[in-house]
Image (cartoon, rainbow, N blue to C red):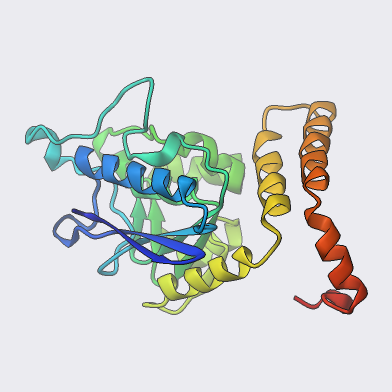
Amino acid sequence: MTILIEKKYPVYTVIIDNPEVKNAVDGPTALELTNAFREFEQDNNALVAVLWGANGVFCSGANLKAIAEERGNKVEREGDGPMGPTRMMLSKPIIAAVAGYAVAGGLELALWCDLRVVEESAIFGVFCRRFGVPLIDGGTIRLPRLIGLSRALDMILTGRPVSAQEAFVWGLANKIVNDGTSREEAEKLASKIAKFPQICMQNDRLSTYEQFGMNLKEGMKNEFEYGLKTLESGEYLKGSEEFTFGKGKHGKF
């Protein structure tokens, strides 16, 4: 097993652990990774997931050597992505804890996550540019949406390494942390997010994703429908009551 799961509810941590290939993902590993996140989606006790690569590397992409050994990543129009969960739209957030390299398909896994907590020495890059391997797990879609077309094309056309500091300026990294602490810091962030009223947070998240491809009128209507679902849940009534007794006043979290 190269994919491990550690549950410290409400946080659910998925670990890629294959140091011999710098956490590269082959076909069986992609399936394990997908199943881990399917389990997360169905686990009502798990509210926020963390994706972390063990042994100082997030993920170096697809395992190209596995192709010759008939363990290559599946490349199919339907079903899961070659790297595993990259076509999934989960109802709950995922945080990437990035150490070392997040390159090629590993970059695409990091882009699939909602947030990226990144160590100081981490490197992002479209390293597969050197070998003619395409971005096929959402990289050409998510990267320009996150950092803009010009910067995305810089990465996609040149394949050059992008440091944590540059990634932070661009909006690719959400937070920079000391080396060796990305998992710990990502799990702390996950715990904070898990404390918020979940129906409201999850619906706001889904509206944010779904507005891509909608015009303003469509997006506003879709947001309103999600807002109605939240209000109909009654979740806000508890929050309103807590506010009257002083909780959260003056911007306090």
